[in-house]
Image 1 (spheres, rainbow, N blue to C red):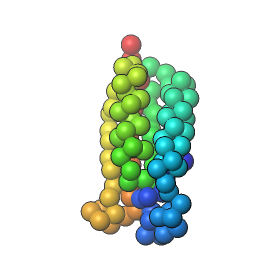
Image 2: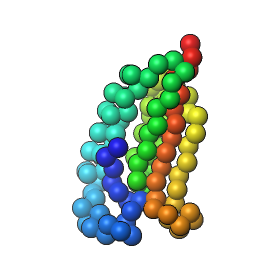
Image 3: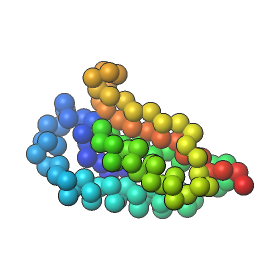
Length: 102
């Protein structure tokens, strides 16, 4: 998923200077569209995984929660946020969404 890359700032310091509120809004819009398109192809009982290398709530739980509010036929199965200062890895977010089986 295209994202702000804020989870990898320690390796990609240029992110600090290119990320703006406008860019973040554009990314969230793209993420919403891609998730919508991907989930059209998920069969009942099937799973889609949404993941970013971002620490930004707008790109992570924000996108997932907005999607779930529009699509009651899906449910959150798993959600995990990796934080560099806690997990000693690059920052990342992953959510598994399952289409309910009718």
